[in-house]
Length: 241
Image (cartoon, rainbow, N blue to C red):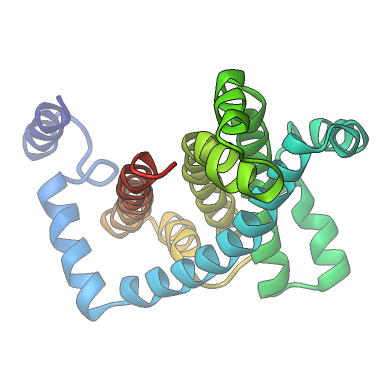
């Protein structure tokens, strides 16, 4: 289906059924993408966005998973923290950008923290859900085999929650990328989002579409990479206990 849509787009652009100025042919966009990625500013912008995304994801994933696990296994802690998480979670995290810019100034810390906040709450919610929805019979089996305390956590609770944790990581990664591209579009002077905005202003549509396509490809590759890592780790976990 995507190939058919691209072919239809190509034909419509080549035959001027749609304006080639606003909808350049996919082959034209592809040529621009390869050229600007290897010899232009697209490669540098990609590295900038990747660096921001990597830092934002790390800042979100580690504390997000830990907080979600702690909320899942400690009822009193969950009762104290969950209302705040539920309150902040629905708020679009791009709305935090003005406050972070006031506090931290225009620069990388504000940009990265906006992306991290977008991923953090999704990771917390997914991790908590993974612990809360695990099959109670697994705990019974663990107890029957003498697993208690830390052993019960490592051998039963964590493996049971891993699918939900990885789902949260994939969703969080996508949300962080969306937030960072939006931040680059609004406030930054570098990165893929900035290139999309700059070429839109200049009406350089092939370059704009090329940068946009690279954002989509980046998200696809990274989430597929996490999925492959999940399959490998869960395969190993199935052999334990």
